[in-house]
Length: 241
Length: 228
Image (cartoon, rainbow over all chains, first blue to last red; front, side):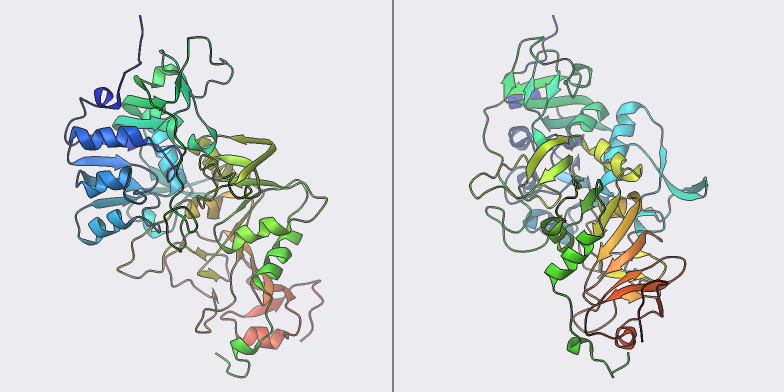
């Protein structure tokens, strides 16, 4: 019998080694799997490479993992936010390495890893400093930049509902990177707020087929907190993206 | 710069007027991405009677206005991470699909803010170039080159009076030759291979006064009826 349900976040992440590359879903706090990040902090793995759109908000979640000194390198599109003070400090002190990737390239490089694509040409960033040193090619009169896949040892994602085969559906814009990260990691761990029987998810609307998911962890539902922009609870004024 | 027309003395469009002016040019049926900051205001001025669909790169199309106070749900946010609503017919999708909508040329219009735009349509809007700045790009480079039409909305001059419309961008580039039109608080100007062509000027500002505060040679757009 296939049963991917794991009782606790701690049990689901017990085997993450030092030096692992870990994708973490979420755009800001929407879709960020807080329970899994807390378990990763408690678990103690060090020298991690983290792939996320941002670099943490406030003092919890990814920000807390950074603050605990566990992250050697981060791959993201938008680290600087009004409440990214932990990343900002580590970066200025030279204690964290940053690979800055345009958001669409980040998503597509992750997708490419999951889809078995060796590399791809994209028009994004052509002629900018983020394409410096990269191979370029003119195709049908347009200039493109060669980009390589980003794959991971683990993907930690947040879904809404799942079953024991690992089929997942998400909630609104909390979906964001979840489906592509699930494809790109050797071991994908998804939290769900509800575990349902096989067949209960409408097969026409399953978003992530269970083949991309190795572990499903039920967690209690709680409201997603706002973060990363002026006006969000607990943040200060300023621009963000 | 020509000191005969100090930038501060010119009558300028307000941010609200700029937003309304951009909105007027968005056709019925268009799918539009409004960038963070000034462009977000355009959503408040979409003309009555036009069905315009708003896309946000974090994974939503058919975005509605901000929810009523107390009804915020932080699983339903826009690219600025502000809570929004979903209109009937709207839907959600993952990031790779969202950027495929952009990169694949499916979006009709993208409106972005900018530090600088060149007469040829180069855009600089992600980095001031300050050596100690923490870089952050987000979706700016994908947005710049993705939509069928990329428009910029920005103040005509910096706080110190320097033109933001330039021959060559001095700030780090976001994209090459990607902007087709610029809406400032002084004018609406097409940019591209033909250079900077003025479409419209704020009331009370003459072409020469506009030229005096602009860092590139301006042309009168054919059919604009602009007089000196």
